[in-house]
Length: 417
Image (cartoon, rainbow, N blue to C red; front, side, top):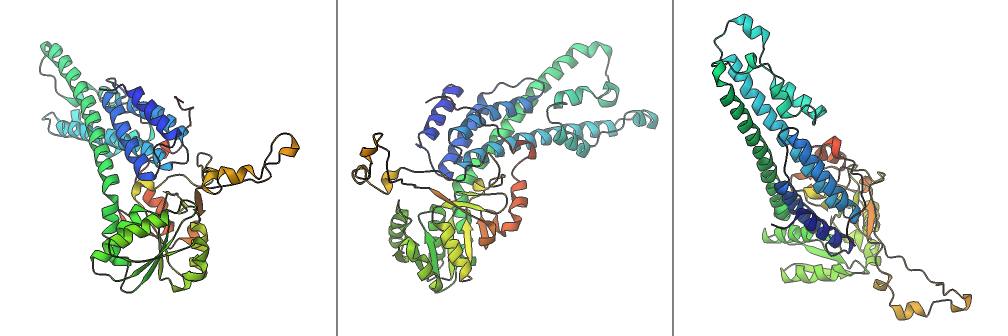
């Protein structure tokens, strides 16, 4: 099996060099890497969840620092940390619940029961949420008096009892890792199937003879539109080309191949054409906790045009794009500057150099941002794999996926070059 650190270093290099880009690819590969880290992590008998959390955080900080604009990486790291905490609480609740049942079934008199009352599973879960590391599950169980936990058969059973406790510790350790890995497998499956789950809702939102506008290329948008077409909806799609990368051209070809009536327009024609549009449907790079959207450049202009003409502006995206951070958080990098060569070839650029100044400083500067930020007041509806939601509901939806303790990931310098 490959060394964990080698896997981490390889992925860090890919992120830094932009060999892996996009929310879906980065989210899936991050989840797979963290699954490998957890499966190879040796956990102690005590504080097992804490050991896993420390290992995941150490790796997650390197990944987030490698390419901060890929917010899906940090999302998945925080999702895995939340999974560890929830699985640890579940194991603790089950263990203490079983312990309480054994106490309640004892035939000792009522006075003995009053001295050692059954523990509340809910109370234990609450204690674990507030202080995950100390006490650990082991420490919690060890802190219960023996007379209140399990009746002693005889004094001669001490050795077998010690062996039984050791076996229980090992079993709990394997159980926690197994449950966490199973939950991560489910997370990976959710990432892979989110497009289909979102597309199933298309027929509820796209109606007969409508005109839909989108910009650039999004797999989720494509599957959403094609699902409505398969349900015998007849509609037309306007695709803004998404300069300078012109991903809209690619999307238009894909839609035509699937039998959809498609019209390509320039980005600058959006405001002129928006009055003919019934709905704008776009994909997202990330969905922030306040309901704002980080999306391909040009979409803020589309959102403003939609608001001006009272056209619904709908954002589709999987739950792995839900980011628990706000745009003002220092960990959030809202944009990424791409190569100027996408706008201007180097021959044209060299003609604009001022060689007479002696230092060759250019008179012409080229700025090529990759993303726009669309504020929540411009968004009409979010459609995720869990259903449709208003922007004001996003923070509550996000709270189901993340723990408050894990919102801040300190960025460590990424290893590798």
